[in-house]
Length: 107
Length: 122
Image 1 (cartoon, one colour):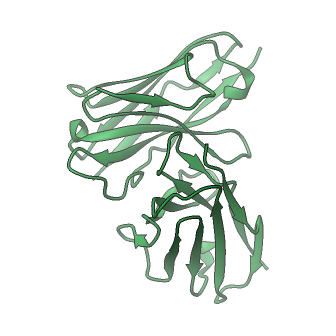
Image 2: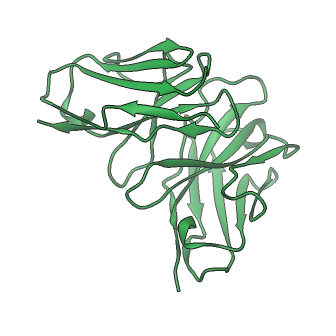
């Protein structure tokens, strides 16, 4: 099973600041890495698929990069609605696995 | 618009059974693989199972293999998850999510239902 390790666990930032979230895989997942945003009481929302492709309707301030084992989700300038938990997920190998999440909170 | 609506959650005793359903609309259901993903209270996401668009292949997380069965009825645009031998650790919100299409894998997990809560407790 591929283990995805997200860091940091919590990121305390102010609106307008840049957020950089990391996801590291225990073995290569090529580019089959997705990022999701989840707010309390809501289903996850797909942000980025295949490492760097924004899903439909996702603002340009969200960007993804990386390949192999190291990936990054960047939010260029945090909006109030961006404070949430973010998960990465790989679909390179079965079983599909998710990272433990990074909570982006208001500082 | 694409909609996925789960139902069937509730409280069940350890060792009991439950069947979850996911009603799909707004897209060609028979052209997409479908997934179940769960989230225990206050915890992260855990992938549970997948079924191919035509039902020809299925795969499960080790934690549910042999106890859960995923199925679909393309004539009714419905996805199901039959859960047997339920344990306390199966307590979670269960989400259905759209996967890859038969024509290619473009942005899987782009649509999710709102989830249905399963509580396993005596």
